[in-house]
Length: 248
Length: 384
Image (cartoon, rainbow over all chains, first blue to last red; front, top):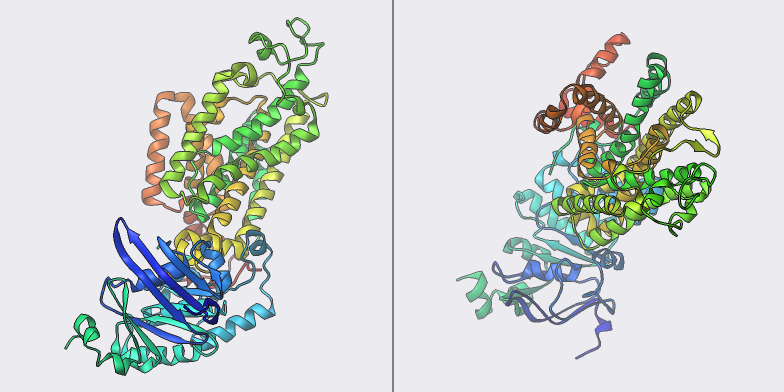
């Protein structure tokens, strides 16, 4: 096996079992720098569990996850974030009572300790960075609006923005277009392509049209294992993939 | 997730509330109340320190502690130990078997001052202990629990259990702690009689100023980034954790801050009332503290102060007349507040009081904003 350090993310022989049920079994998964990867698979295939394992929400039973050569399986969640891994949850997870601006500021990567947060000053640099990210997620005219009043799609973008502001090297997105309208989906696809420049992104997705529009390599998970990997066009011809997931 | 109107979210902007509080505490009450009543009010205000701390850690941090009596007690006992040692000089205790130690030790056949009492002969050490010990206790409890992700009801139950444990310890170790009677008969502070009139007035004012200081400190903490992260983690702990924050550290800090304030309250209680006993440490006082914060408004620092004053005053009025009924009444009040006014008296003031105030000022330009616009206009004020 080649050296881990060539990859941004190298997962090897990863297994996690919940009371004997193996949600992920002997999985190996590699990602290059600046790669956009889509993970698909039927319900219960272990897609979300895989992201949970990378970001530390779930702990591995066996195996290793190396990010830039550092072992993540025993690192605490906030340290993993500091290393440069950003995680978006499936349901928009934002602070609904705070304004869009405050939401973005709450993720700003300065003042992360208790005393740092107490001493935190909202200076020009912070405001400029927040405006820049807000433009990227098209919320720059809604900075003072309460986040709870945003549309569903805008909430999803806001959460993506909260990750962007930390400038992570690896972004984990769990079904970012779930519940979005068609036009929102198109805009999100565009947004993800922009985001993917200069960083690696893992996207879990069910919408095949959306997956195709993203391009990039696709990994098919099935029962906690990798069933197939490759370009979407090739996978659509793959017998096993059609059987378990795509259907006839 | 709870969606709050803006005024309840910690940006209680202007200085008006603080000025009113200062006027009430420093001018109105000393002018209107005789010394006995003022001393009583001063005693209630020592509970307000705990209530303000609870607004911070329960209201904003979502950490319900049913053991704040622990920290009130630690601060109070630290001060009482110093005063007791001063009251137990060999001259005034010469009839004891062992002169120079507190009377209750002598009664329990202890012949030597226990080691943990010795440092309390120093006033400087005592003052540091009052400020540091409660927070240190809170740090140990908080570290043990929050790092293991104990939260919610479990945390509440454990803090309550700890309050019981401390009470039992104090009551059981009579020779070292004064037992159920507590530490009584405190007279002087560095030779200055703490029971005379001028001392009582001085302590009242000192107490009021320290309390206003705690409210301002609480405001400062809430208005910055820390305050927003605190509220955020109350509602979406995972999002905060996966935004790169060590959630446990943030909880430990606010729990320690609440304990720090409670300890000051306890020490001021000892100074003004002249004794400290386990009845201010256990479950009943700890729950009363929570009721003060709930009645005043658990998202309002100022509400905590008024809640402590009003409920304690009501307790004095009713408990004297109907001691059996009091517990039932306070329970009923608590249930009513939770059901009808989840944000306590502070929300009543915000809804009606401000309207009245603006009418009094004769300003027609400030009609009450429609509820939906409340969040925005408060979001821009009081930031730093």
